[in-house]
Length: 502
Image (cartoon, one colour):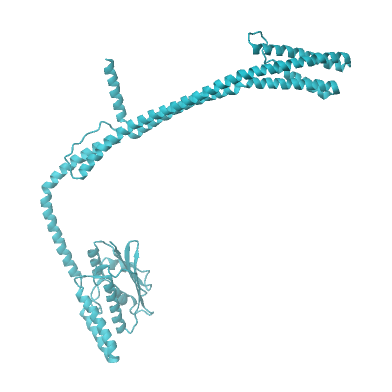
C-alpha cells in the first residue's frame, strides 16, 4: 500500500510538472537554486560574522588591562605633579583619572573563585582601592602642608602602585597566553568553516547541474525526435512512425501540431495524386494558350511604321541633295537606311539598350537634318548598360513624343536629355524635355491609354505611348514600369522607365 501511494504521488507529480511550460520549469529550477544558494550564503555569513566577533573579542581583555595600566600611570603622574607644583590643573586631572580608574575597577572580579586570573583581578581591585585611598591622603596632607605626613603616605602609596603594576603585568601575560591559544582555536575553526562552505557550494552546484541536465534532457530528447521526423518528412518520407510526447508544454504542443500536419499532408498528397493528371493537362493547355495570346499581343502591339514619315524624310533628303554636296546627302541617306533597317528588323525581336540608343541617335540626326539642327539632344549613359535587353522600338517613340508634343513649336530653344543610370538595383531610363509640359489630367489619360493620336498627324513612326507601355509590361511581367512627370504647362516633361535588373 505504501509503495502504491508513493507511485501515485510520483505519477501525479510528473503530470503536474508535464503541464508546466518550459519557461515555468526553468524559472522553478533557477528560483529554487537561487533560494537555496541565498539561504546557504546567509547561514555561512552569520557563522563567519559570529566567528569574527569572537576573534575580535579574544584580545579584548588585554586591551582592557593595557587601558587600566595607562590610567593607573596617569593617576600616579598627576599625584607626583601635584606634590611638586601643587597646581590646580594637576589636582583636577588627578580627580578625573581617579574617576576613570574606579570605573575600570568595576569590571574586575571581586569574588573569591578558584582561578588564578580571577584571583589576580580580585587582588588588583583590592590593592587599587588601597592605592586610591593612600593617594587621596597624600593629596590631602600636601594641601594641609604636613610634609612629614604626605611623605609617609606617598611612600606607602608608591609601593602599593608598584605592586599593582606588577600584578597587572602578570595578569596581562596570563591573559595573553590564554587568548593566544583561543585565537589559534578560532583560526582553525574559521578554516574548517571555509572548507565546509566550499564543500556546500560545490555540492549545491553539482545538484543544480544534475537538475539542469534532467530538465534539458526532457527538452532535448523530444526535440531530437521531432528534428529526426522533420528531416524524414523534408526528404519526402511521410510514412514515418510518429510518437506523441506526454508533456503538455511548448514541445508537446509543437509535436502534436507536427503530427497533425504530417497526417494532413498525407491526405492532401493522396487527393493531389488523384487530380494531378487532369490539372496538369489543363495547366499545359492554359500555358500554351497564354503563350499564343502573348505572342499575338506582341506582334499586334508592335505597330507598323507610318509610311508618311518615310516619304517626308526621303523628300527632305532629296532637297538636301539639291542644296548641298553629295557627302552630306550620303550620310543622311545612310542614317535613314540604318534607322529603317533597325525598325523593320526588330519588329518581332528584342533589342539591346545599346541598339536602342543608336536608333535614337539616328532618329535625332534625321530630324536635325529636316529641321536645320533645331533639336538639341544630350546623352548621359552609365557604363555597362549596352547589353541589357528590352523590347525593340521603346526609346525612339518616347523621343519622338518629346519632339512632337514637347519642344516643337515652342518659342524657346528646345532640349532633349537622355539619361541612363543604376538606382537601388534598378536601371532607370529618363527622357526629359524643356517643352510644353503636361497637366496631371493629361498624364493620367496617357498612362491609362485613353488618348488617340489625331488622324492628321502623319509625321510619326506610328508607335504610340500605350504601345510602349503594353510591350514593356508584357516583356518584364510587371506593371507601372513607365511613369510621366511634369510640373505643368510650359515646364517640360520627363518620361522615366524603371527596369528590374536580375
